[in-house]
Length: 296
Image 1 (tube, rainbow, N blue to C red):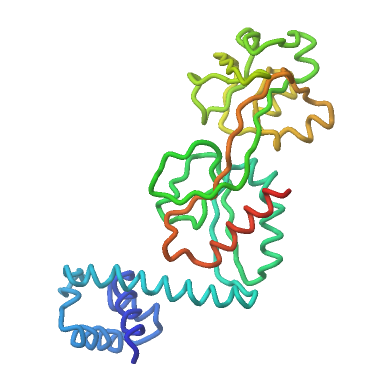
Image 2 (cartoon, helix red, strand yellow):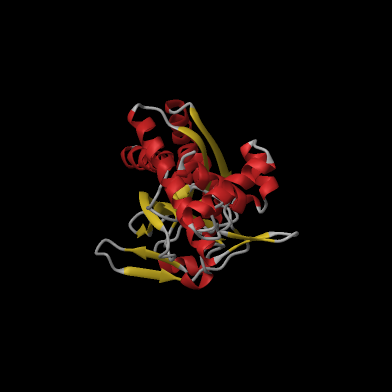
C-alpha cells in the first residue's frame, strides 16, 4: 500500500472523529482502517493518535502530520485538476456567494456560460446581501463589492461599477430637480444600509473636486432592488450601481439627476482564502469571470 493511501486513511480518521466513521467513508472494515493506522505509525516511528474508549485525539506529532497530509492531498487534487483543465475538462463542486442583485443581474449569465463550457462542474450559488466571511471555508469564492479590509484573503478584481443618483419623474415634478449635490440635503434619500449614513454621498465635479452631502430619508434597506422599487414609486432619490438601473432608465421609470457630477466608482472582487493549493476549478471560474466581465 502506498504512503498516500495511508495518509488518506489517517486524514479520514481525524476528519470523521473515529475509526468507525473513517471506515464508513472509505467503505472498509473497522479492522482494516485500524490496521492501516498502526502500519503508518510503525513506519513513521511515532504515535499519531491517542486512543481511549470514548474518543481519539491527536498527539503533537499527529497534529503536525495531519496538517501536512491535508496540504499534500490538496496539492495532489490541484495537480489532477490542472491536468484535466489542460485537456479541457474540469469536474467537481464549486460554491460561490454573491450579493443578491449583482448575482442576478450581472453574474447569472456568465455563470451559466461557465457551466455550459464545463458540464462536469456542479455549482452551488448563494445570493445574500449580508456580510460573508470568505475565510470560514463555506465557499470557494465570495464576491464582494466595495472596500476590502481582510488582509488574510486573496482578492482579484472583476470590474468597476459606477454609482448613479436617480429619482422618478413624479418625485422630481413634485419636489424639484436638484441642481447641486448640496440640494440633496433637502430631499428624501433612500439609503443602502451596508454603507454608513455618516459617510453621506460623495460627488465629483468636472475638475475633480469632491462634494459630500449628508442625507436623510424615510426608507433604508440592505437590498438595492427594494430601494429601486421605492424610487420608482416616487419615495425619493436613490444612489445605486449602474447595472441595477439600466432597465428602469430605459423604460423612463427613473431619471438620472446631477449629470454634471460623477459619483463614486466601486470595485467588485472575487475573494478566496489562499492562493496556495488553489483548486484548478476555482482558478478557472475566477479567471473566466475576470475575462468576461472586463470585456462585456
